[in-house]
Length: 203
Image (cartoon, rainbow, N blue to C red):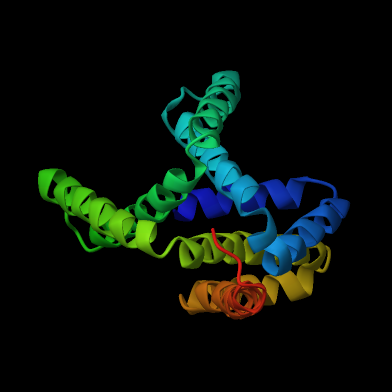
């Protein structure tokens, strides 16, 4: 998890600062209107997960890009038609990945780790099928907050002093990054839930 965050920050640092503009726009759109385009968001989430798996398991070099694009495309196509069922499974996969990450950091390894992860995927998928709107809104809110903050970070990186202070604070206090990410995500969730109930939308 940390490696992926470091790679993303390196990408933002080595890319032109103007990359922050589309990131902020995409983030804001997802945070406020993610529920309106939930099918596209679910398919995009599967594409990102597939691409991440492809990059992770591919050999270093150009093959990582090929594997990432190929698996991302396959995952997106697989989720295209059964998108409602895919939305339910998405919640289970994300929750299971988080459970595995937490247990792995706690020292659990081997078969017990994967059994716990499988049980988490099964249980959370069942919950997600029943509460599909909450899962979809949670995913779009989190992705929106992530892209929005990434765009802001791209601009903050131009100031070495300010970015250095933020980097030091994040290194000293582990809760800083999750807190900064979760605040806009939670606000987006409440807003989207209110909009869905106001318009009586069914997913």
